[in-house]
Amino acid sequence: YYFTLKPLNNDALQPNNHAAWRALFAAPWMRIATFLFFLSLFVHAWLGVSDVFKDYIFNKTWRAYAQFIADVLLLIYAVWLSYILWNL
Image 1 (cartoon, rainbow, N blue to C red):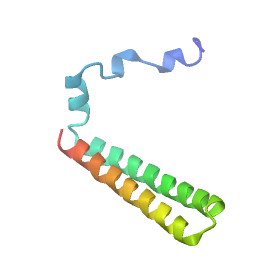
Image 2 (cartoon, helix red, strand yellow):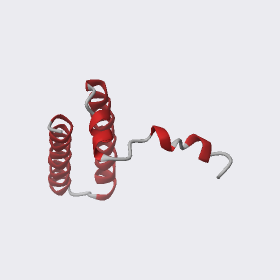
Image 3 (cartoon, rainbow, N blue to C red):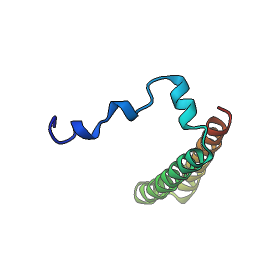
């Protein structure tokens, strides 16, 4: 580990305080890239959860309720993420 991954972990390039993190996310491209990353993560989670619901919840009514709850939660997470990114 020390000889293979430790050189890749350059502590000088990582933000180490709040001001450095704010400066990193001050650039619009970083906010957009972060939002796109999490948006793709939410889509991936939505697809995975819907497949799990299809496999394990056999009653279509219960499956629809569970999918609706998952959809609302993922939407809330996306709104929360946009609030965090653009109200720093």
